[in-house]
Picture 1 (cartoon, rainbow, N blue to C red):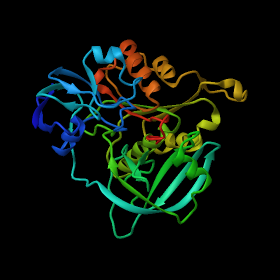
Picture 2: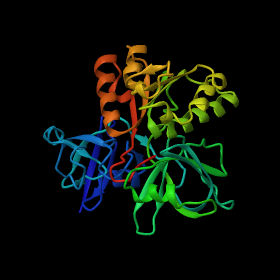
Picture 3: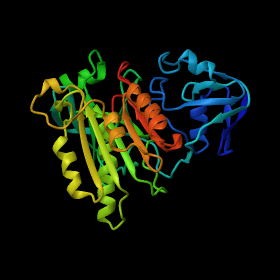
Picture 4: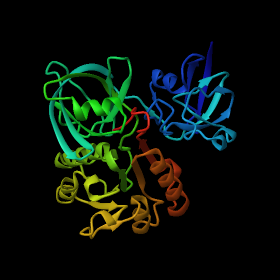
Length: 346
């Protein structure tokens, strides 16, 4: 049985079968809704059902709480229609012409950037052109049929290899394999590009980038794409990056980010660590990254914020920036990384 889904306030609509999720149906119809993990864990696709009934599906309880359910919220990557629906989704785009592909790749280089972070470079097939938009991610296709998702850290202009930042998740089967067994020239398979996280190219608002830990990966892709675009003659938008970590070691490409200030006009970088007791030599900002952002930019009514990190960080930043800094809800864009199930680790 098929139902009609209408999105508000855009009034865009699409059909959805009872056996497919709302997100799957939207993507099939060429509409790009906010999403990330597709596993009910990150909360990026959380939306309000204004009319109609849904089967909420399987999801992480902490992501869709009882209060969320009482308020009519659903996770579009899990929810299936039981009737015609009206759903509030303020960020809707059109899927571009970039095809999603399944490709082999070869491990080109593994670099230990921190005790728990590996920078992985993957050589792409010379016979296949792989296109993506800065901010998107890929899924590794594992032998048991499972997937592991990681954001692309390299810029789209780099067309011969992909760079990923992989944090070791204790007990995570795939990340443990990367840290303990993976070696150069090993062959992996992936599907991509995936995800809706990207810079809104039709906007002229100043950009604020907010990253936690390896949430730096898609931000790196966005910034380096902006550098390449500026070098081709397109004036860049003002851009400020707040990158937070528990300690200095967690800012594993600190020098690279600092160098962007000289390479991209209008770019500013603010590193923040939350536990300054680990490094008494640290003279920079301390505390939460989004708190430093609020202190520096108390009025965000004319900005856009792009946040990448854990679901808890994303939720706290969204709530505080909208409530205290006047950020329009539709100007907050996020990609949340869920580590508990080793499913989206960016």
